Image (cartoon, rainbow, N blue to C red; front, side, top):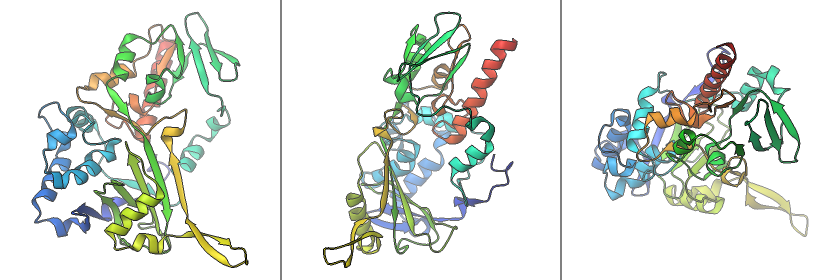
Length: 360
């Protein structure tokens, strides 16, 4: 879609990245003589070729305790969980399936949401928002769909695209129950809590040319949102899976890494005191906890130990009868689960399946 629409992008492959060991953030070149650093990078870069025991990423890597936080950042948090929860074989098999390059691109001038809405603007006006579905009865010739308010809709075909967490928690009641093939597959994948903090600073104190900062314990993954955008953009994006995170703890962690620079340079709200004198108060931070969203309940799917590619296929297999089809990032079978690309590819697959069920 990026190439078709000729969108201006930022290639993070041209950025410097920092890696944290011993609570010290340094560039890769500065860690080259460090055995623990090299062990993590060798494992991460060769992850798609992993063929060892079917164990967690943490067990498969076998790095020292000193390097565990760095491993967790690059091969745990980056894939939606912690390194002791993600299955190494399952993840490696998915990475093998990817047919695109390994570039990480961000859109330079617009949010991804703007691009999707403009690309599919003819469909947007047909989308009904704030209408959560509570039940789908596909036992008869016509499918009955009930929303939270009790309103009924009917259809001949339905594509279900809810997050994995909703299927696992029976957020939608299906009649008849979903096939055992699909239900068994849901148990093979996890979907952890996910918190994102966007913190605005008066100054970029971590490095203008830096992209990611890997290896924190409070926050495994920091991202320089202003890289190659504007010298005036000093915003840091913090993404945390599987554990709690709050502004105070993240700022404290940054202070520890950068000698008090986080608290010193964070941009704060300005409020007049009782005498009308402007005073700086709380840090300017945008926080979104997807775990608390009742219709998302987490980040994105990841393979557990013992997961196979067939489990991904089973998860997205249409229910018998050609009425219920499944899409969403968790059902992607091209190695891009957990991404917007994976979600889009799954939508194309499910739509083709639906069309084929009509045309034969």
